[in-house]
Length: 507
Image (cartoon, rainbow, N blue to C red; front, side, top):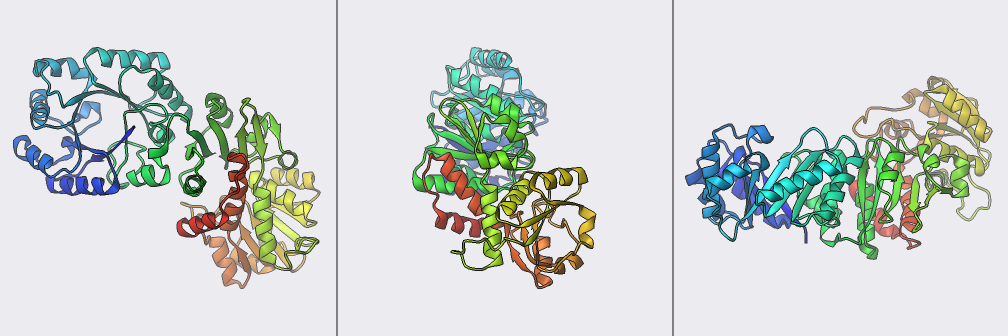
């Protein structure tokens, strides 16, 4: 079982002891005491205090500045402190590869049987090739490491795959981590690829390396205790991605129905490269969001007819034969939410959108889905976009009209129009964004915003202030996620009530 370790980076012994108790309460298996963070550290006084006050097994690290830590003193003092930690009964000691031979000589090869030696190497610039990583692991093993630790930096999410390849072939226990937000996958999937431990922080203010999730996220969102070699990998590939609530929503629902999969936020830069690199059948399904919904069409081997007509995909499923199949659940989610917002009988044969004029702001993946769906329901569609040529292209494809974004300030050919924002304007963290001036909102009967974080965007708030009926993007979020969930799980019905409960709590 991969252990969950909380790094302790407090500035005082008292704070560290308190954080160790918090780590135990949060469900961690062990703590890493980062001695180099303690101000005025006095080894023979403070180490016994720390160990007496710690309710969990302890890994002691005294990281020098030349390896990314904060210790600036001499090596003899540092080595003596680590030897003292061993004598006091710590479970693990971390020493850097660059000085591992010297440290082994310093302790004359004498190490308490209980204490395991972690020999580590940190590369804060990039992730080397598989061959270079394998050679590095061999060098670490050769100096007498009980556990190999290699931490690198991700310039691209595909870099993580090289760490996974080396981990699964390592003959001794290994900690393999790729730092930065693009490397998050290495931390969550450590149990799938045989990692000895992974790090989870108490909160975002107590990080010891870039890209660390919280221990709560590891245990409660990603359900890391249940991840194993057979666990399927799902995720949202987008840029940006950390604002998304999809990982919370999907993981809770996967746990609820007992489906062995984990859903990750995947910060990507090139969709085709990502799909080509992570081509194992275990990487079985992906949600696509900005800016990849249109690119996804070219990446898929087969397409659902609706997705092909729209020209945008938000759901990719990898079949057992390796073929990628693209779907679009955005249009169902958005259009049904807008229809409910307009009102009328749900049993009506004719959609409440029929004959209405809808202005779709945005000509990307979401905009295409809404424009196509509205046209199918009999609406007259106008597309407004910052890049006018893209508005023209989409309008021509669905037999509609194109506008420049600036034209919305005065566009009022008739009363009773519907506005649908399908851009990222107003999305966290840029919550002051809006696609249309407030004074123009009174032209509309209904305003829909595909943005759901925050739940009440500036657009929706200002529309309400103008007395206009509003429809939150949360509705689209839930409904499109229900369709995705069923595609990902091979037809298992999405637990709608649970999805709504989670969305209400986290959006």
